[in-house]
Image 1 (cartoon, rainbow, N blue to C red):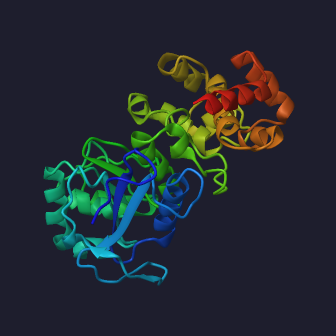
Image 2: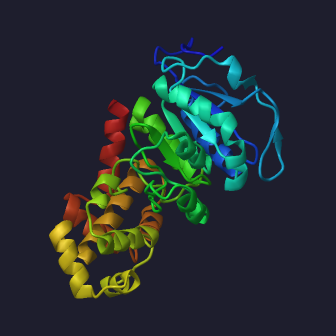
Length: 338
């Protein structure tokens, strides 16, 4: 029976149902569950006070991951009468092979359509995107792992793909390409229901260095979609090389455009040059690391792409009006007062 209350807190827990398909990725599942574990209880990790989860298969049968590990679920999906009240998120962890997922699709499509009609928030992980597309339950765009973009486009040419983001949120379905991106997925889903601090809790413990903040440094997809493709390509390159120190000429060259033309496009659509946009992206990451990790300043500087802590301090102070240390101390003090 799904839990909706706890003995130790009046906060309504977030209920997750995790439906595992044959051949699912153990990395995807493990990363997601460990993030829930860190956010699930304020002081210890052996309780599910803020996050409840159930592993399930269609009929409660054991399921084998792509690596060969076999898992016996605690309950079958048929035993669960899911509603938006007792299920905040239904996640389907798709198998690693699209052909196998499509072969299993007739067993899952009726369920996906039923839960869509019930307004249950559903999440596609890995190749479960193929199931949602086959069921006709998709948003304006979908996300699949980059290895399977070609297969998806062959089967569903009318459905646009976003090939650059880790978590794509939509009114109908949320998508994640799997792998370690499910850690970001968990944080994004939790931030909708809990506090920001609970959502990001444990990321530094999980050694997720440079983990992108759900709301601050990911350049919202709606904003990106309005840009010319050359600008999108350059921003993606900046994100991929955020810990490096590329020159604007290097970014333009990798994007296949001249530096002068790319700067004109950035000034027109972003409001600032390529170099300043790249610097501000690094500073946003540095601010996030200062707030959400205990990393020393030298490490923060290195992970966010500055030559040393001195350069970070100069640029940070110029933008924020205070040093990184003062900013971090102020954030910690405000958190203590919450």
